[in-house]
Image (cartoon, rainbow over all chains, first blue to last red; front, side):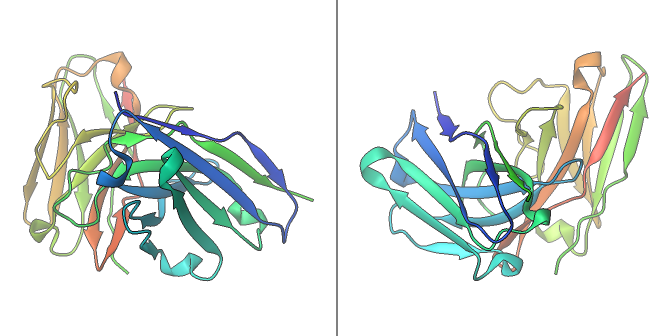
Length: 121
Length: 106
C-alpha cells in the first residue's frame, strides 16, 4: 500500500531553517507529484507547492517564494522541503501528499503523518 | 487569488443527511476534491473530481455541483463522521483549499 513517512518534530529559533523529509513506498516514486501542505494550530490547510520527482521541477506558492525549496532523492524515494528564515507564524504541522499537477488529477490521495515544526526563541 | 467559501460549521442529527457547501467563482468549470480531517490526523480524500469516491470510502459520501456551489453530502450520518471537511480546487497553476467546515453529529 502507498505510504508516505515523514521525519520527526522540530523546534527552531526565528531566522533558522528547517528541512522536513518524506519517504515514499508502495508505488513508483517518480510516477506522481509530491505536494507540501501546512496547517497552523487551529487553522485550515495551506498548499505550499509541489515537486515532480521525475524531473525535479518545482512550483511554489507565491507567498513562500524565496523561502521554500523542495528537492528529491530518487535513489531513496524521498522528497524534502526546506523552509528558511523561519518566523513564529511558520509554526505548523507540515504534510507531504501524493497528487497530480493539474485540475484533472484525482486529488491528493495519500498523505504523510505530518511533522510539527515549532518556531520559538 | 482564488477563494473557496465554506460554512464554519454544520450540525446533523445521528442517522440524518448532512450537506457541506463550497462556493467559488466559476467553480462549475473546476474539478472539486473533498477531504475529511479528524483531530490529530492527516486529511483523507473522500471525494475527487466532484463526485468520485476513492476506494474504501463509504457510499454514504457523495459529491455534486450546481452553479457556483459544490456540495459534499453525507447520508445516514454516524458519530464517527465528526470531523473537519475541506474542499479543494486547482486555479491558475496553484491548489486552493476552502477554509474548512466542522461537522458535528448530534
